[in-house]
Image (tube, rainbow, N blue to C red; front, side, top):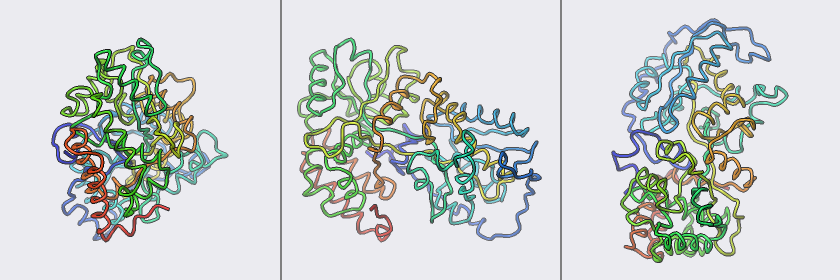
Length: 476
């Protein structure tokens, strides 16, 4: 079952996340923005401009109004309220705030009418398609923000403070138009408390991983819990194993729809066989194949299983279900024999796109708001309020105490260094992504064997390669 085909589960929050990695849920945009294309005079009068200076590169007017709309999903919106209060204090502005999941519903008429907000977190199942906004000239170019001085160190530009890949991910048609703000790492998670009590060592190889799962089974627990109704998650494990064993070339072969992306690729077969071993040896949490993401994650929080796969939004999503002394910890996917990438290598990428509309009444304020988001002060506010990292390098003040899961993600990113990777096929080919998820669902239920999984995944690749757009999507 693909995530896009369910009405349950994801309506209430974005998969940010599932994000960069994803492009899973798209919403028909009807004749959205047809009204924008006609041009015409801009009727909204913006506020007076302030004087441009080094401290005020966009000329924000003191005492203006700021209109901010954010997606209220897995991260809530308290962080944005704290940002707005800080902005109003500094600039003497008056901010209005809307936290909602209905981005298209609330904003379509405003974009069409030429009176959009000044800043939008355009996320969730009901986000407005970025390429549609871009093609109808509704997005301000954010390049001036990249070239502006960083608030933390005016000797550096904002661009110098961002994690690699942030600018590429927010670029449409060669223009930087959206800031993907949240930096997510993907892999396994475990309870530090449970591992300490049982005397288990976090595994670095797949054999060690299976051994801990077997010990968990002996102790009456499941080894691996997974979000059975959403095979997206177990695909994180399979795809990470492929990338780590076969190296970046194996990942690119999949994104580039090569005829040997899966078939004839020894790394791919080894990865699927490794995951299937968990099923064959009966090391899954009983019943986990029939659970939603929150059900399986909650069982894991109740110490019913040793491991679960997820992105680093997990901690914030499970706040209410996590015991105070659980000690949530991140683990990179352990290595198969003869892997090309090190154990520390992890899948990581940016999600949660923030935009400034081209016709914003206070565009200068919008640009300054984005620049402020890329300060350590605001990045730290986000880490504290939303328990997640941002795309600002070393963006969390070291004096700030983070929750254990978020702290372990920080530690893992530092250890990974330049060894991070991220698949693009889910963004580019959602149908192929769904087909591979469906194959994984069958695999985990023991209805197909690894070789049949490989066959189905390659068939999905070959079908995607027929898409005329495929020639525009190439990774070098």
